[in-house]
Picture (spheres, rainbow, N blue to C red):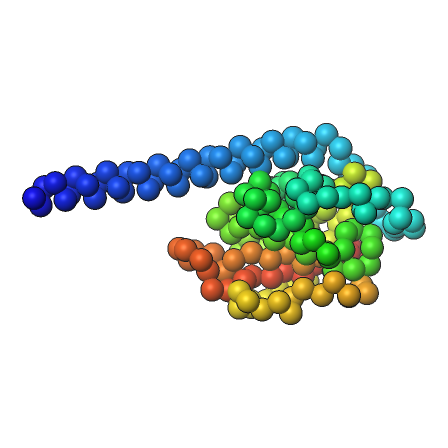
Length: 193
């Protein structure tokens, strides 16, 4: 009886590990597809000043669209940005929180991602590090100036009415936590002059 129970537990453990491995593989494959799509249209031209944001056609973006690339030079990492921050979008890259701004609009831009996939090693970022947002019309460079840890249900970090441009990037915290993390790690980066 004890031997049968041991075998059942081993089989269950292998099945759980296999499922987790499949999910990680599938997420990486979807991220790679989105990255290929984004690389086909993003521009590396650095935007130092935006004069006519209306020409960027941000209003044509729909939930689920690939809209750009988040590049983190310090981590040598490039991640596709997907419109929307639901689980479906976050499984394929970084999610742009619908209702917040886009680069060049002088509003808050909110991006979110999972700590155990797209934002691995996120805890290595420090004030002064750059984050690049590559869009169809150019690359916007932001410098990290602050970070904080808030409760998972704290929505005060979302401010769509803000009148100055800030790139806000959030992920679950603590980074080594197993399961649904109780907090969020939030980075604030401002346009590099």
